[in-house]
Length: 618
Image (cartoon, rainbow, N blue to C red; front, side, top):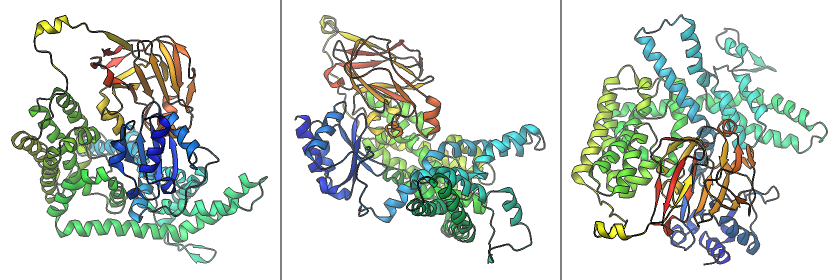
């Protein structure tokens, strides 16, 4: 099928032009926003020659094509009335998009909280460790050491409205600095001090209900949402010559008082309602609550609705001083790790065994995507075993009254945040969840996939086979990781081809082969090379870095350039990319792996540029 025919086929199978709100492409995939997902035929798309797989993520319907995605996209633009959503002149998405309330809510929450999770989890873990060592009297709480470390662990939570203002402004497309100013007013020292003051305050005669907004979640999100409309309204008539000064001033004049008078108290009531509602359900039967949370958490993750629980957890910690949900969810995570270990111990498939081995350790520390998509869900039965084990472990933990004193990502690393009453039950519940999943996978078994690699009948035949090979050197300096650990399902599953991951320590990318540059994405985040011997290589810096639109990337080659091994191709700013909320972990993929006997990876855990990385065996 030609690229032109493929583009037509894809448009038809996503439901036609009339079903597309917007579309753009990155280095490997077409990214659609559809009006009605049910009109898209995912199974037919995945069976279409030229389509590698289909991924649904972040409200996008992503059709993975590979290196020729640019040509397919060009034909799509030429043959339809669709426009490139990454083009400044592209049409706006239609307001009639058919997305239910839950879908919209999950999209908003995930967009606001996902960039913060790393900082929240890291600070929460440090906070738990500080509480642990203080309770064991290993540190003097009056010392400067404790003061500084406690400030480091507590600052993210105390100034949480400011952090949320930044991410909310991105989601609602409004002035981030004005949003931060609104959040700053909520945690302004004089305002915090006035909360405990007996005198009643008013704004223009209207009584103010003062509340401590440090660590609050919903008030600032409501405020920034309203700011986006207020700011848009002022922008519609304020003259261009003074817009940059007058609009922020007017926005602050309107939004800050409204926040203290209305959005703050209402948001606080919603927070209290969420916390009290969850506590009511939990108090009805901790055992049932724990069983449901432990059994179904990873199911929620698969469908993306787990984001809806993040504000509840944070509201619990802010309102009650603790959260009972997080310890239960850790049982769900450890049960996935246990089921994967069971697969590792029982499977006779070398590829599945290798994937299960590396995924087990990742899952123990809270990274379950490779485990779920690569092992347990793929084999079906181990996923069921994990859900059963997680439910039992969660029930034990909840029955013991375990709580988390600060927010963290559910994993073995989060244990210090659970220290206190019920901690012993956490340990017991996690051990049960992990070990039971291992036992079930080994005793009840699963459909072990057959080896796909062809085997020669005798050793003498092997000696007679002439094997040709091509060596690829490392284009980056950094830590080497299995491809299965990529947070992008299309890469992790191997659907794009075999390869390896590098977590770079410096932003310099060089050519792994002698060859020709076949693709340089306009944003610079991905480069395709065809070696002189025919290997087609894709180097993709980070995940979803296409959204940076070229920021922090400096291209040094163009399509058609003939390059030598070790030649500079690209420079990128690791710190700025990470600060923008993106990973720089880079897949190096041989996209035409199917044409070769095998692609062998280095056994080293760290590499420098031009160190041995991959062998392509013909």
